[in-house]
Image (tube, rainbow, N blue to C red; front, top):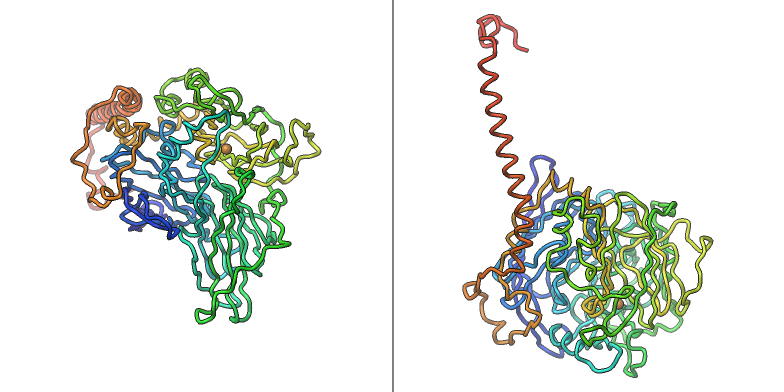
Length: 593
Ligand SMILES: [Cu+2]
């Protein structure tokens, strides 16, 4: 349950949640009861609501018993709090079973976001949900009367651990993405949303799926897009929107002036990764219900409805193209068989591997060497950025699968995105949008490319990765180490909370790659922390020490400062001229200053 209270210092709200994460079961498509990861005994997990300027405190208690966990807040920049980004092995040690970790950060961005586990490939088991950041100063305030939050998601009947095992051991040179069993709308099917006639709604739509894109439309209704991935846009009318995994849209819908019918909302799975499969695209439908006593209409056809071209969106703030590129990075999305005998997705020539020491802690504890990519290990695919430089990423997809690419800690300008099969076609400046689309997740098309730019104004360690979870697992991930020296300075002013070190000295079993699922019967048992081993693990001691040393040094520094201050005050007392009656303001007749 959320607890709200007001900070005395700033009068901003603090939104506090306790999230107890544990196994349970659910049957969202009506076809199979399966283990899912619940929050506070509930599935679907709750939507997080906050206002711009609020502080969020989420205490995550891991009662999964067989798996570590973490929470990432997709799209939130985490300015000054890179250590709250929730990426295991990157910005923190994973939260081991039986332990807890408090996420504590402030929000300055309005819009539609989502949270999900960023530990191994855990979130498709259900640990994900929307985040809505309301904006008292929204430019669209007054243009809508109510708000509707909708999530779309693919859904598998097999647990992630089994899907991953099958994915890694499949024969042949090519990887085949597991085909989802169904599509969910608000984690259910046949959703009914009661609406009033002649009313404008702000709909916040987020794709919280594991891998699949979704096309979304509402029968006989037009959507007016006003937000993309947390960026206000100029109003743009659409009949059908495509959302890749991780993407969000905010749009206005005005209901009709009669209640003679109800209308279908439809999400259809994008078959691009399974284009050779003969089975039809799974869909899910829900309803805008104008009149509960009227029958739900049969599903209308989408014939002739064009999918909206996101590249035509113009940010409302009209931020111009970032000029004068300081650093240009070229990335190729590729796939190769590596020494482990497994075919991996990868950026350039190496598949990403999780570092033993979280990359953020490496950046914080290596002094001037933090600007040397070797510090992070080549397998973590590090790219080091200088503070405030303009960074251009040219990304090219060598293969036939579309990939939704997501950058943590930023959104980016999309200067250009090629059509499918554009290959190495040169892109010139004349192709660039002057007021580019800005978002944090972009679909790179089949054998296509894109040019992205952003300013490195957010010191931290951020992942850049494909948001198809099986591809990220396989290695389609890079590490952006942004302004590490400035990051070290930030950390001197506000050191890491002790939770970060505690997480690194927890149970070693937690990160076992063999995440065998517990049975349905076991999930029904009450969680109990007593059975866990609390043994130290060599791999976790080092990061803990690395985090603890600066913490202890700062604590010692503060203690020394207090000692010096006290000592200095004492000696000053002896050198003061004794207060005379004339100087003493407490004496009657003396003016106080
Ligand atoms: Cu991918």
